[in-house]
Image 1 (cartoon, rainbow, N blue to C red):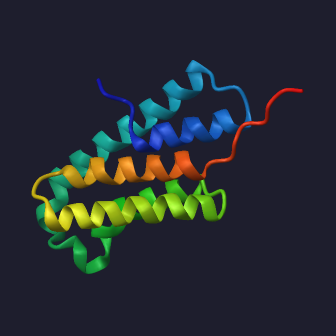
Image 2: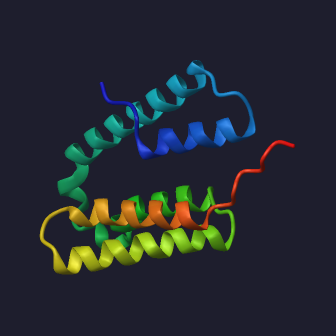
Length: 126
């Protein structure tokens, strides 16, 4: 049963940034999201044809909106903006000029490279 999602990872990462992350916290976060995902899938399967085109009421933007909120939770200033800009630019250009899902890897790689080269250097112990 796959329970690692962007959302459960982000919740766990936020928790780890503030306090000790326990297996119980991760399990609760992951299983609750997994259960909600499956309940929502069932509701969509049963009611989807009745609702019609959900783009009319903006539901097609729900997933990108959740992802944007997750990203903003990790905002650390202009350094984060540069990483997001590099990732978005690489993804867009790759999606435009190369067939397939290579834009995902290109965006991730561009973001990682910018983060590596613009990151703060760790303080050396005295």
